[in-house]
Every structure is written in C-alpha cells, then in structure tokens.
Image 1 (tube, rainbow, N blue to C red):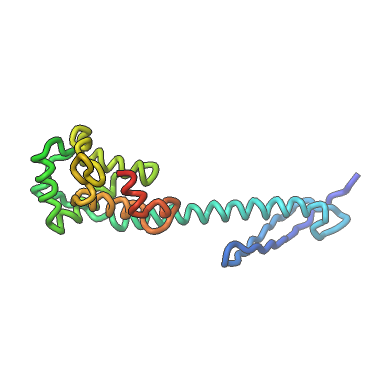
Image 2 (image 1 turned 90 degrees about the vertical axis):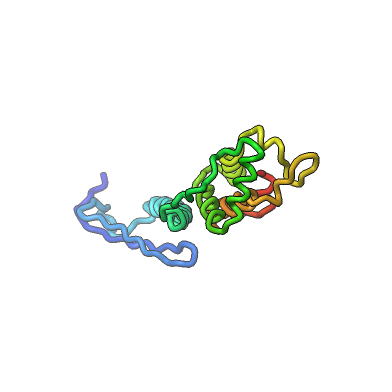
Length: 194
C-alpha cells in the first residue's frame, strides 16, 4: 500500500505558441504526493503531456476567437456610427424600372453611395455568396432581378450599375481584410454570387 503525505508541489510548465512564449504555472497546496518522491514522478508525465495538449488546444481556440473578435470590432468601428437615412432614400426592394432608375440616380451622389454601402454591409449571411444574395434580395424583387444578368446578354447588364458597385464594396466591408472568408472576397467570387 502506497502511503501519501501532505506536501505542496509547484510544477511549472513552459510552452510555446506561435511566435510568443507563454508561461503556465500549475500549483496545488495540500495535495497528496507519493512519499517515494517529492518531485513529479515519471508516471505523471502522460498527465503533463495531456495537460500540454489541452493547453495548446485552448490557445488555438483562443487564437481563432481573437480573429473573430477583431472582425467584430472592425465591423463595429464601421457600423457603430448611427447611419442617418437620407431624406430621399428610395423604397426598397426595387419593383419596377422607374424605381430602379431612382436608386441608380440616388447612388450617383457620393454620400448616398456611402450610406447604401454601409447599410448593405449590415446585412449578414453565412458566407460571401449568401451575404451577396441577401443584399440582392434587399435591393430587388425577384421580378426585377430576373431582368438582369452580369454581362447583359439578352438582359440588362448588372456589372456597370451603381448598385453592383455598392454590393461589392458592402461585401468587402462586411468581411474585412482578415478572417475565414477573406479568400472569397475577390471581385470574381462576389461577381459569381451576383
């Protein structure tokens, strides 16, 4: 039968994560330790290795959360200012040619284009494609959207419109310059979503 005595132990584990070094200290007072050794025994090495793996997993999760938090804070920096809706803001979604022309004319003013871009950037989605589709639904009814395609072959070209530019800028504003979707932020990917 192994006897346990009441001893304190202090084990310090140093680990390295990425480019920064961190120090983790595990302390326990009045913990029974084998009377054969006051040091950490070789049988506790697997336990320490398990702790190290768990700490590394926690650090990895924390790094991912920091990236997400940076994106949220960046969006808040853009979106926490109260957007004042211009008095001549058109009714959306656009449901006919006249309303479409009104929106294009509205977007020809820089301050209106900026407002629309920031407003569209508040529309979310689960991916760049989904966000783009949600923005299109905000701007157009299905009946009007069906009259457009990207290049204008047999339909009206969307690629040269102010609304198209506003959507592209808004998607980029929504996702920032870092994060899991930055590889999807090329104009090509956004345009394919449109």
